Length: 326
Image: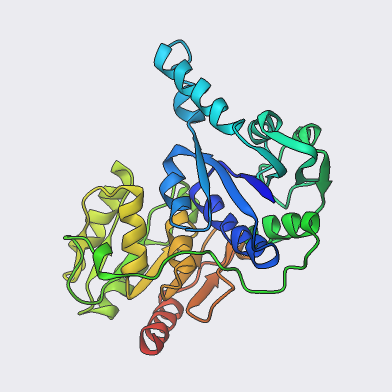
C-alpha cells in the first residue's frame, strides 16, 4: 500500500500530523508513507524514520519569483517528484485550496482515493471548497484536537480505530545532538515568543519564574527582532538566563529535545518539546487549550485557557513537579 500525506505547514500543524505515520504502520506494517511538506519543515518530517520519501514544496518562496527560470525549473521538478508514484491513498489533512490542488496533481492507482476533511474544527482555517478535490470527505467533530483530527480521518479511510496515545516517531536525545551553546548540565528553555501578542505571557511572570528556578540555567531563544528584544529584557533581570544566537529550525528542535524543562506559550516549539516528551509546561493565554494541549503524557502540564492565563505560582508548581519526577 502506498500512501501520500499532504500537510504543508505550519510547524505545529506538521508536528501534530506525525502520529498518523505510526498509526498507519501499526495497522498496515507493509505500507509506504510519503509526505508533501513546505521546504522549511522537511528536516522535521525526516526525523521520523518511517516516512519513506519527503517531497519538498516551496509555495511561499515560489510565489515571489514565478517569472524566474530557476523557480519554474523547481516547480517542474516538484511536479515530477509528486507524480513519480501512483498512490492507493492521498490524504489532505489541512483542508485548504492549496493543499487540495497538490492532492489533485498527485496520481492514484486505479481505484485509488483522494481523501480529506469534510469540515473544519472551531476557529480553523479550513476552506470548504477544498472538498472538490476529494473522492471522499470525512467529517470530524467541531472540537477535535489538532493531533486527533488527522488521525481520525486516516483511520476512518483505512478501517481501523484510533485507540492508542499518539506516537510522533521522534528519536530520543543523544549526546551528538548537543550544541556548543547548550550548558553542559541540565537547563530550562523558555519559549516566550509568539507571533500574536495576545498569546504572550507577561514578562513579569517569566522573570518571577526564572528567578524561582535559579540556579538552573534558562535559555531564551528568539525568532524575530522583537522577540530578541523581549529575550534581552528577560535576561537583564535573570542572572541565570542567556539569550541564544539566532537558531535554525533544527537547532531549535534540538534545544527543545535536550532541555530538562521547557516552558512555553501556545507555539510550535512548545509543542515540539511536548512531542519529544521533554518535561513541558504549556501556557495558554489567548487560545483554546482543547485544540493543541499535550494530553499524551504525564510529563506535560497544560495551564490556562482563552482569557484565563495562569499565574506564576501555578506554572512554578508545575515546573518543580516535573523536574522532581523527570
